[in-house]
Image (cartoon, rainbow, N blue to C red; front, side):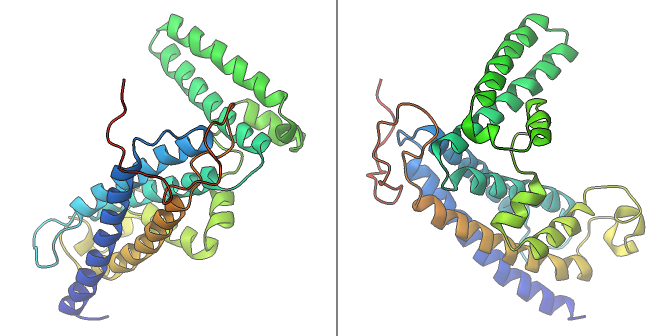
Amino acid sequence: MPSEDELKKWYAVSLKEYRAAFYASLELHAKSRHLPLQGAAEISRLMFARIMLLSGNISKLCPDPDKGGLWDFTSIALLTRSLFEALLFFRYFIEQATQFEMLARLHLLYLYDCAERVRLFTGLKRIDEADRFNEAAKAYRGYLKDNQYFQSLEVTRQKELLNASRPSILTLREMSRKYTDEESCWVINQLLSHYAHSYPMSFMRNDEARRDGLVNQLDLMYFPGVLNWLTTQLTDAVKSYREMRIGMPGEYPIAIEHEQTIADADIDVGPPQD
């Protein structure tokens, strides 16, 4: 294994490149946040904002290379897993699709959101609010049942999705397989999950030096590679977001020209006017 000094040098380079990618995402989000997007483009903007915020949180948690004391590897790993999921959902909504397919994706997302609120408000004994979202969920189930693309799915998958078991047609593993180098990305995701749990494969079987959060050679070996991986994913997301059409299909009517992209638009528009 390389020495601690060598690992810290590698970490310093990886952190610098990662922060450059984060600042690029921050700049692009700040310039595009007030664009009048519609349909799936608006959901993609929300997901990109989530990506930017999580990236910034990770950047803040990553200590300077010469810092001693506590290195919060666990929190960095947890946020990195959340960022990976956000990147997958961003890809899912930014992907070019027919209008019926994109409507199905959006309505399933709204159905899942309503169902989660029903479960929450029922548990909180706020029955009026639970009933309100239950009515909305019924409407979205109806939209899905009438959707041509949704009707083309396997019957078993239709039933599963109508039960609001997840917010997307694809599972996370299916998204990873479709939108990333699935094998390596999922291995990294699995590695990071070991920081999150108290199961034998993670905390209980860690080396003594890794149990108290202090800087150690093994975590220093893992994290530059994780940061390099995130930098690649984040840089690719910034590029895709710049190329996103600001009137992607998904809602009616679509008043903005589909061919105009975030990069093409006059994105320094300031706050919206009343």
